[in-house]
Length: 268
Ligand code: NAD
Image (cartoon, rainbow, N blue to C red; front, side, top):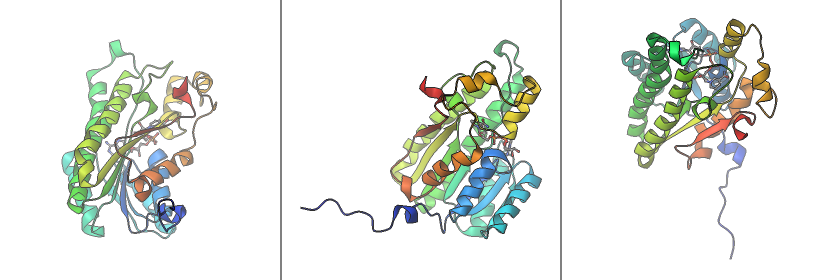
């Protein structure tokens, strides 16, 4: 008796995203930009969605130079009207939405006892409500089609508490993103929509560089390095493979998962 029949197409073939259409929020720089490039290189059409239209246009141009279809859309993810029209613009142009990467996020440091109410509200608005509004709008299009991949950018901060800096609102918002991912995955699993999240550790982007410069006056925090077994920050390109995996048929059996990619930070 033989073993089960294996899929005829090679694994590299099955990683391809040809014919898929994607959006990446916060795609104008940093992790979002790297994800947008990865999806485009794997064959998808990609919409770069950002509150900053100028950076979104620059990235969309970078992608068209690579020979894929791309567009830039200005959108503030905290506003449902913006989010709904953004998804509509993509479906109107490309006929469908198969991949939604909800990555826009903000972070800052503060002591909990002196945190301003506006800081709390803004963090929750962008990191939590913004991700929910995007999931909701994307799922409406995907559920109709019976298929779709939603990937939220959470953070290892949703599982551990970073030190030495104090960033409780950020940590709480990211824990919320992880549980939102599981909740929506359960609701939509039987209707073909998969929802997963990635949780990066310290990754060298503008968000991190700005915080370090302002707060510590350095470009690297020695304490972060000593707490990371691999002893360095991630490069944005080191997150790309994971997102391509989660975006295509390779991950059809995965939903509600939080994939931590942190150089070992959360292991000890
Ligand atoms: P970044 O600041 O470099 O980029 C964030 C992008 O989001 C920017 O282009 C910004 O214009 C956009 N944005 C901000 N608010 C928006 C809004 N309301 N609507 C639409 N777009 C908006 O940040 P990054 O480091 O690339 O982080 C991307 C995501 O990864 C965030 O969710 C962040 O919390 C998460 N993350 C980052 C790290 C890290 O170490 N860099 C680690 C874990 C998780």
